[in-house]
Image (cartoon, rainbow, N blue to C red; front, side, top):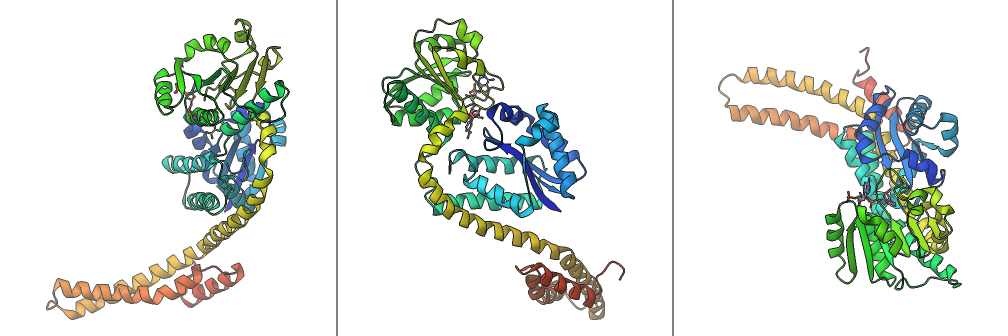
Amino acid sequence: MHIVVVGLSHRTAPVEVREKLSIPDSSIENSLASLKNASEILEVSILSTCNRLEIYSLVREINIGLSSIKEFLSNFSNIKPDELEPHLFDFKQEEAVLHLMKVSAGLDSLVLGEGQILSQVKKMMRIGQDFQTTGPILNRLLTQSISAGKKVRSETNLGTGAVSISSAAVELAQLKIGQSRGIDGLVTLEHEKVLVVGAGRMSRLLITHLQAKGCQNLVLVNRNVDRAVSLATDFPNMAILSKSLEELDEYLIKSTLIFTSTASEKPFIDRERINNLKIINKLKLIDIGVPRNISNDVKEHDRIDSYDVDDLQEVVSRNQEFRKKIAEEAELLIKEERVLFLEWWASLEAVPIINKLRSGLEIIRKEELQKALSRMGPDFSARERKVVEALSKGIINKILHTPVTKLRSPQPRQERQESLKIVEKLFSLSEEE
Ligand SMILES: NC(=O)c1ccc[n+]([C@@H]2O[C@H](COP(=O)([O-])OP(=O)(O)OC[C@H]3O[C@@H](n4cnc5c(N)ncnc54)[C@H](OP(=O)(O)O)[C@@H]3O)[C@@H](O)[C@H]2O)c1
């Protein structure tokens, strides 16, 4: 059995490709079911975020397993296999384990050390368990990866400074507004007429960062206006006007800085919509949705500067230097976690022999107990019989404890295999015997 991962991320694919491979929550169950249908896939789990889609799997045979996942990705995205292939990466075994641990720690994120990814890995594990597509190996790998992610955040400074895609988006706005005023640096946002579209997790973070950068009032548009109202109440020191998506056009005209962060599967701001509006202000649009909320053709409008998640790279690389140093420290912690997982996985090799040994001894125990009990005759009470039974179980467990612990303990593979062979031979545990 082998662990593999196939995927694509902001490192390997532009947003135009990533958005075609963004699997919404509503399609996860079907996607997992169709992957699990393939006989070579034993366990499978999907990580789908704005910047990556990764499919982790336990497969019988590496190449067949990889092809099967790639075929699924091609079918799902409607991208021909040879067009998709250059955007995909794959890792096997130890490399796949290391990759998930790095992802979980935020070391593979666009914004190094961002915190959202850890909750997305937790969600991936929950979904795999709910739909029963993960089993002992992937569950253990996911648990260990989540623990690696937590460890990196608690034992290094990688996660400090509340970094996220949202904070990078606000920073990009400051940078672009500054540049258009001829200032080389970050400016306050207090004079901008800000509109945020979407009232989910990302919008909450956006508003937090906007507030920190001087923004005191904004308009919050959401499909469900009650959710916008509820989010607004969490910012008592800001004047937030909550509006429904039907009123979007009115506030597009009135704003100067617009953020979109909805989970809409299609763009809802495009050139046609903008052409029907009387745009007076020069607009800066920053879209952190994947799939994108703003169509690419908006970029051609002369009164609009439009940016998407891939444009965040510009601000991200400005403040990554000091994080890169901390990331090196984090990698060491991750490698320790990887060793723990691989040792546990290797120890599973001993399980079939240990199980056979246990069942062989259990048969002997039961037979001998039966003989002893029948020799005791009717004078012994049920309680005394139970004591004798417990005694027999206790002896077996005590005898097995040391060899079982030794067989499962971390050790070179060859050493374990030799020990297993000896046990198999001495106790006649092989199939033929
Ligand atoms: N979570 C992250 O770490 C992260 C990071 C970067 C980018 N993103 C991207 O940011 C976007 C939002 O993510 P999130 O985590 O904030 O999601 P979320 O908490 O689930 O919130 C989803 C938001 O999208 C709105 N929405 C959903 N379908 C819509 C539709 N068809 N038309 C208009 N609005 C719709 C929802 O409105 P209702 O309240 O009316 O349902 C809600 O405001 C996604 O595209 C995601 O890929 C997420």
